[in-house]
Image (cartoon, rainbow, N blue to C red; front, side):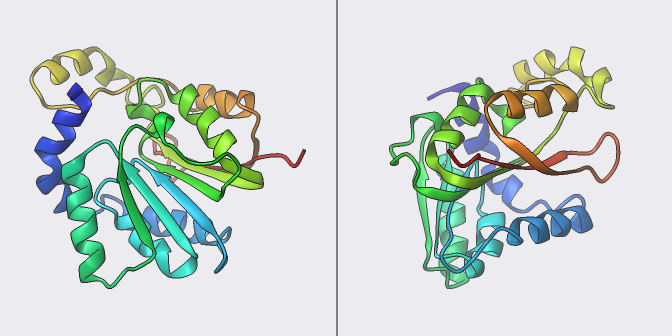
Amino acid sequence: MTQAHRWWDKIAEKYSNQPIADVPAWEHKLDRIRDHLTPQTQLLEFGCGTGGTARRLAPHVDSILATDLSGQMLEIAEARGRDEGMTNIRYERGDFVDLDAPDGHFDVVLGMSILHLLDDRHAAMQKAMRLLKPDGVFITSTACLLDGFWFMVPILPIGRMLGAFPPVKAFGGRKLRREIVDAGFDIEYEWRPKPSGAYFIVARKPVD
């Protein structure tokens, strides 16, 4: 089990009870995601956490595969899904880049608040590209610490050692945007609630 597995398992219950920090921003993102959904949509969410986003989107799609590294997070997600009567969400524990799924299977790949937590976000972008159907969309929301929170970067290693922070990568929005384009996607929509806020991007896989 990696450090990231252990950290998220440990804080899963606390995390599950935390309120959404910026409800209007979250609702705006959900609205933009729903713009790309149909009753036939096959959606994959990686880094799904306790499943709040997946449950909000489930009524608008055919099916969702929700994955996460943390088994504790997924246990909470599954329990809440059952309580809310969600029958079209399937949960799977594991690393997204190692996910065993056929290429070109999904209409939407969703990664909310996750790219900055990955050891290799480039591999995740490449995986998303492979799993998407032509003309499918890759939708992300990412904390870009160098855009307004650069002062936190020196303390991140200390916070990790003390168990206060998960492993976090620091980069800026311009770099993230360039990496998504370099992975082969066409960016269609980008939005931030404020200059230092999470960077929300909708990017499309080109049709061959």
